[in-house]
Image 1 (tube, rainbow, N blue to C red):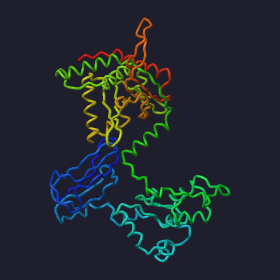
Image 2: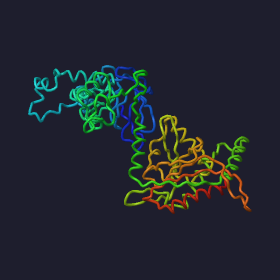
Image 3: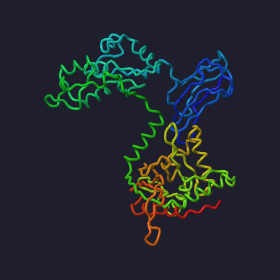
Image 4: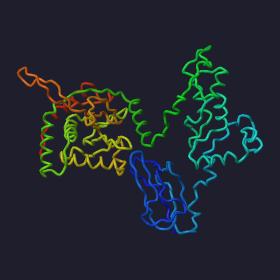
Length: 460
């Protein structure tokens, strides 16, 4: 009996997934447990196994498609098995093409665009030609150009190969070309002719009347001696999510950063002690400086509950437990997994949990639910290992603040009796949402982190 394979729901916050690779295609034989396809959320990647043996009777999506969770992905069954009842509600290839092809937007002319003769007269295309071209473009992965966009681009000497289309399947439509025209100066007839023939383009402003670009204002967009010196690459789904969330964070909050240094002699001595204990087998987990800083942050958050909060517009949500987010750098981009109830953990337990979630992020097996900004109450981002002395971290909204941890640098300090010496200081950068916290309160919290670091004691 045929079995429908659906797109799994990976976490409560995930609404759709991207198909990264089809391991099995329509007609391929499969065994129970074989990998059918791999897919990714905005943060993690997964593989889906076949629930039964047989052949792939139908595959509803292609690589690169974004598929809603719980949507039918494939049908696996016996060769020749009737699956017509399982296809109800799914679009045929012809229907898919109708979505890919840009509709003819000329209804205002009064012509009946369903008439084959009118279609040929308006678009210059033979009926059926557009559908065939669209099918070729879908299969080849190229970005098609609508006839109206193509004519407008040719008339104004615009290279459509450098444009990103906003139409279905990346199709370049008329408004994409118009957007380019709005952002460049008008051109004289001679300038347009030279631009079209020699691949030249106008500068930001022309020297002609009212800023019109003349032939002398044109220049080559690429050095003819070297050819193209750049490469355009589509950004990944994860990069899109990161870009959108970072932009939204800065656009919809009042962010301010305070910087402070903490005397690092204590934690450096503790780090040396922990390393010796690890080498001697007295510890089974490597406790790093970052673990100690995070442990100190948790202690400070318990004393400043106003920082351990979410700003929700008209209300502020204060949390009784600390759910600590830790920024993790991976090959796929920055991830911020959350350790739930971090205030219940010992320093050893915290260090162990950090290593587990960091490894899960890097191998793509992390639970998407702990990557949501709403899952955490506060975040720590450490760039100290890269030698960064000061930076401005961006808040994971709706959290009220984030701490940036910098490298350790020697600074002069009064060590008593008017004697100054160079002492190692670890830099701390606190970015907070001024809508949620006042400057004085944020400063006192940052100072409390420094106090916790300078007086940290570990019970191992």
